[in-house]
Length: 89
Image (tube, rainbow, N blue to C red; front, top):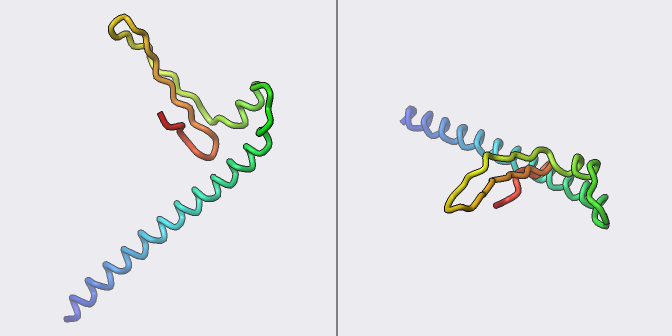
């Protein structure tokens, strides 16, 4: 009976640890979203995209090798925005 109690206690400890980790991740996501919103507010009425704005909004851009399929040329590009990550495809 004591062994069963110890196993249950360990299981609950692991669940608690996992829940704390999830809370931290969600909290960081919330903070990043708030930072993104504040950043976007600065640029909501822009008329022209310039280097300064791109550097403020975008963390990195990945450009992949050109592929040729059926005489069509394609190239994959991934844009990672500051605070929110990769743009969806």
